[in-house]
Image (spheres, rainbow, N blue to C red):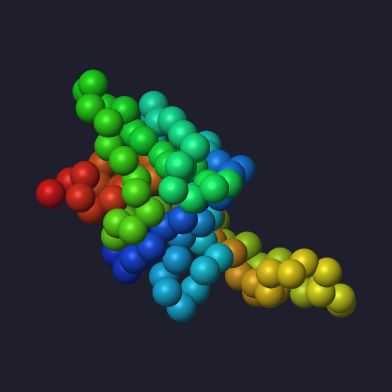
Length: 114
């Protein structure tokens, strides 16, 4: 079991998947299915085409604001096949990590737990 403590930035894509950055590695994704329940996504008025996630717990709202250090569990590591031709404007990622913020306490933004 590996829990990351080195994540510095999160940004959210409109397809309701968190994209997490370590600063030197950008291909970490947390799908909606692996977000804490109950949670909700709302359009981000400051960043067009993106959403903000809120975890609802004991009648309190806990925001994932996109700049918090977070802890997440690695659920899966993918090694995509190398494309013969690059059609996507995003550079090829030789590895993708699927993360989770569910399954045990202590996962999510560090600010939730201190």
